[in-house]
Amino acid sequence: MGNRSRIVLLALGIFFVGVAVMARFYAYPTLAVAPPDQVAHTTSRTTQDGTVFVVATQRETRLPLTSTRTVRGDVVAAEKISKALDRKVVVFDTAVVTDDDPAYEFPSEDDAKRDEKAPLSFVQERVVLDAHTGEAVRWDPDPSKDNSGEYITTTLKPEDRKRPGDPVFKGHEGLVLKFPFGTQKKTYTFWDSTLRKAFPIEFKGETELLGLKVYKFVQEVPKSEVPQVTPLKVPGALIDLKGRPSVEVQRSYQNTRTLWIEPVTGAIIKGEEKQIATIDYQGEAKITATDATIGYDEATVKKNVEGAQVDGRAEGGYQEKASQLNLIGYWVPLLSLILGLVLLAAAGFLWRRPKARRAA
Image 1 (tube, rainbow, N blue to C red):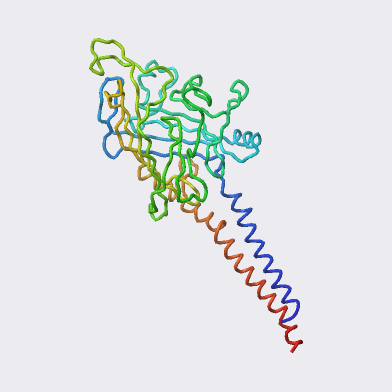
Image 2 (image 1 turned 135 degrees about the horizontal axis):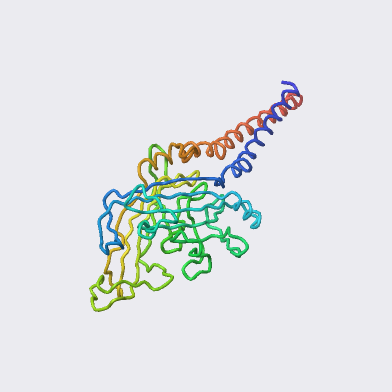
């Protein structure tokens, strides 16, 4: 074989090794980022009626519950904060509405009975996340000059938003909406909106959902007092203290949160929570505020695995996204490196062979 053939083999070998390096260390990190313009909707339901304390009737009531989460990316804020922090971040506004009406919609501003039509539970947050790891990033600019800072609130009033440093909100921490790309089989910390802090979430094994490999993580949130802006008071009659018109109480909460994670993308494919919240007086539970197990419905899980169009936008589809990332991050580098090394070895062998013949 002539010198030209050996040079071709050498060039091809160098080319494929270069492809392996570029795919693993440039293409994969470029693609393995959370999209800043992401919009996602999830729906969770109770399989059996949950117990909730209904303020309007002042009673513990068994009700079917539906919880809807909307996540919407803020591209402009993400670009600004990424530049300010010199790191790639994404910014998401989230809203979680829980009610016994599966089609609940907030009443209009001019509705005279707006407060009476409030949902059973509402939490709205703005979170800033590392685009690669999903970890919360602290961002707390002066709100009088910049309204892009993280916050949490349980009302629609902007003045009620709690920002980092508030007595009941120090800022987001841990994982919030997703796990890292290339999720490991280990313990992470995951955010709990009710207690406004992160708790460990442990890897518990592998399983499949609709044919997709997922990692199962379980988080035990211990019984804790819920942070309150002002002391919580209830009529004494509600806790068997009929002679007292108003009594200061505490709200306690605990949760077992189970998440099923697609490990390549770090996406949450399915979630389930077993929540218990009580109204306590002098350390004793007097009222069950919430006792329910609620989890993603089948349509949400199917959308997360296979993908679907929602309001004209593609959502979910993490089976395909994981395959694409796995191809770029693992198979292309591996096969290109093997092929490149084989070609370089062949070129080296052919280059030495003529010398060995002359020596003979």
